Length: 254
Image (cartoon, rainbow, N blue to C red; front, side, top):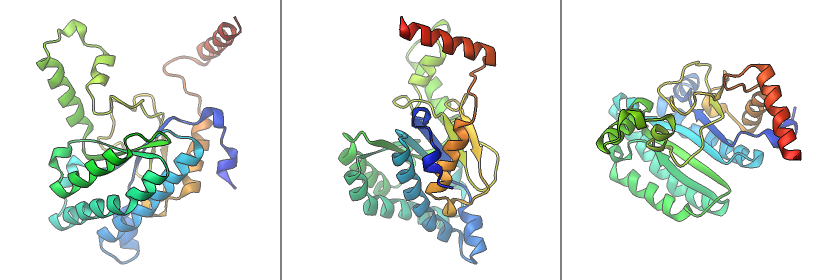
């Protein structure tokens, strides 16, 4: 089945986030070290970005490296940082050519200088592009992000009566982006792993058994098709949603 042809272009999520899981298990199945899975996972990143662009998604956030990942063996962390630098250097021409804007969220100050330098160059070079935003979550933790936001709010002298959901959102690292409507996690795991906990309050969750290096364009389109079969209620009943739709239609006609 060609899932791209099944997508309703009027109901494409503007923002899709992905927890890219399964690199280590994929490498083990090949009789290789974990880093072999990370290297092959780059192709899944290319496929997902291509699919997102073709489907009309405007923001694609990838959970590339968590704060907790710093606790992994030094050899693996060093290899991941080198892979990040190499990937950005090798892909930036293609991103630039295709109108992709590169952005990041997370505690970027923790990254090695070489990584930060390549990220900054890539973001500067692509900052005016509007086809799609590719957001890399690096050294990221949702709890860290919320903690930082609350510290900033307290430091600014805002009273407790002035604190709202909107105010907190404005102090998150994702303040410039809409909240994700769809969260995808590969490898069969069904947990959020401290990723965008505030932002995905009403996101649809999609879990697939596919290991990340095997995730391809059709897998991405399939996730969107599944999303489009969901009824997004935002805490409302089906009857309330129908009433809202009718009123919206009436207002438009008026």
